[in-house]
Image (cartoon, rainbow over all chains, first blue to last red; front, side):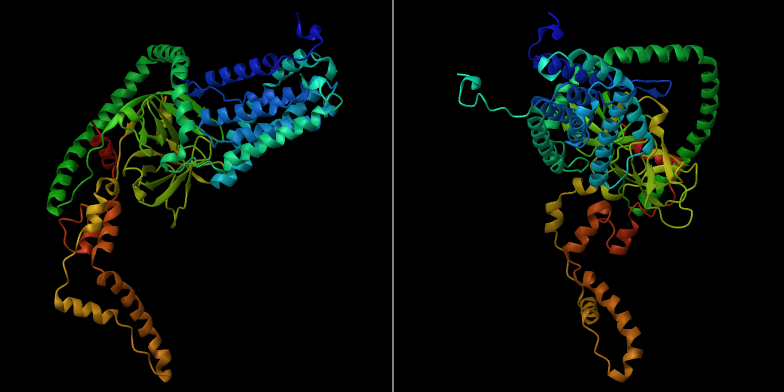
Length: 172
Length: 393
């Protein structure tokens, strides 16, 4: 039985649980201290895919709290200020939720641009928090590099949206 | 009875609005947690129980994930070494020839150093014990640059301990739990490290910004640094021992003086955690506080008391001419304060950071201050390696 044909409610485990586990797993994987020929692995923010896709798929009361937990996990695992990524991801989710009606039926390129806007907001919040907490401005190059790598993750968000967008008939 | 069958069956709340409320509530929780965060401080609780617990849980997982990657890295290094063996051999021969000269100089300097130390009655830094650890996880973003190492409280690692590779300083321990410790890298945006320029002896604060090359802040004087200068830890504040190699000065694209870190010369998969404690931690603070200072000789005490008395108010006519005198007497009065209090507090406080024990053999306080290692002549490369040599287990 496919999700689209079920014409029933979405199973939270399917559209929230499994993507969360996947995001955590790949985050752990990309944190290995590998350096070959002086090059390190990139460090994209995988939960950004979920913050964007979940808000597009359908409004939910669970998703913000899952994002909060995911952001806190990210902060604890990466050793950053606790709450930084939680607030940044929620800001991105809130933005996409606010313009959700505008995004309906748009093509992949437009959606990618909106994904970029969500990323810009999240990283802007992160920068603001960092400046307020440490008094230092993060390196623009390091910031740009992580934003760029995170932008490249949009195809995963697209796949998630395509898979679950029409799965719940109430949100068609 | 479900909600649909009850009196609220006709109540329909717009889901977008409820989701928005959920976002706001979650955001408030996130902001509250952010405000309570004390990352980057040296407080023991900065790491928090949650961080420690998560690091402990993450350790075996990261270890398992990192193992095959480590094997791949070793394999690549093996291939690289095989293909570059000839050029590597050539380079090493040149390096050995260069280092042989340094070794001879180091032996001579060490001999001089020992003699000077015995002449001055200096008490040098005690050897620093250390533990080895393997890095199992790594974060490299603009907001956090930390690493997870698989050594913790069970081997004596404590918050604030410096962390090095064989090339140079990496950072310091930010938090520690059983079997795991979190290292704050020099490049982290919250990292501040007191350093000095090996050539000019000028001080600066190495400030991370999430990029690869941290900035040198609070530089003073004309040309305090030049490109290519060696940067070492200054030991100011007692956080790090003096003389640990940090890197080389470069000028960044933004015009700021930055430091290319020595630790970037190789992979940071194995690190050494120095179980360093400065003199303020080693000295018995209670004993220092309780120490009684012998009274001054009567003549000296009378002189000090006379200097401590306020200067007589000059007549109005002579006010202008009296100004310099009053001004000159002010410092005398202020300088008399500590002299009057030759008692424990000043001695104890001055002894705190560096010379708690070095002040012992020297009776007078000026001598005690000169006995500090800080105004010593410029540290040579040999001096920079001294702490590392002293740190051998």
